[in-house]
Image (tube, rainbow, N blue to C red; front, side, top):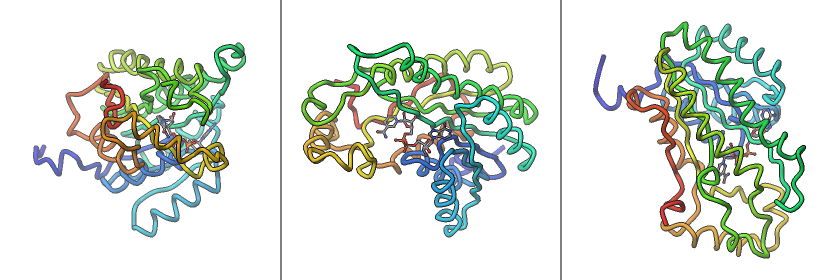
Length: 269
Ligand SMILES: NC(=O)c1ccc[n+]([C@@H]2O[C@H](COP(=O)([O-])OP(=O)(O)OC[C@H]3O[C@@H](n4cnc5c(N)ncnc54)[C@H](O)[C@@H]3O)[C@@H](O)[C@H]2O)c1
């Protein structure tokens, strides 16, 4: 097998599945997997967004199709993944990127909020379990769980003061769980030659999202986010493309159980 770096990074002949692949960061990662050569299947509950991402990438002659499904429902994710494996003949790569927020501050958080928060990592685990069945048939695979810098450090209060709600405790707990669950999975499935890694994005705010778009203090909030990062700015979705393709590809064949932090340096000081 070629050790040329372009061949190592290629996903030609691979099938990649990405949950939440029609979202703000998901659609950039979908594009990256397809640009690297993978036949890429987006699984997302937003049918309109799925249609849009598929149409946009088809114009670039990329191989992207979509499945509309609710990955928080166990039956739905299991059936979708089996259907994708049947349609595409194999699954080589899974990116888990869905998030369903469960906002509540620590003084008011309920058991129900936590159940909703942890359902996110449950959905990641079921998608992994289901894809692993098909990866075993291929003989190897790569799984990438999207975590967050807020699974490593806590929500930084001064950034949010007077301008936005802080990141909720349920989110931080879930994302810390995703990073550690990734290590557990990496050990558990190593015997099957399945690598499992996570990516922890830093601040990649989406200005169009309702809670940001309706916020009159948005500019101040963005300024503070930028200041907190050593690189002095927030991230753009395309800045995750390299990490996801690297982890999905043979270029990362000796890398498992790791958490790649793409945060402009937020977590280093
Ligand atoms: N944006 C950031 O600043 C940031 C920072 C750190 C980590 N992250 C992580 O990156 C990932 C993507 O975040 P984003 O900002 O792109 O979010 P987003 O809300 O733009 O995208 C999430 C996608 O998941 C889909 N989705 C939601 N519930 C679903 C369900 N039940 N079934 C199927 N699909 C469902 C949505 O339709 C959407 O397309 C998340 O895991 C998030 O926690 C984001």
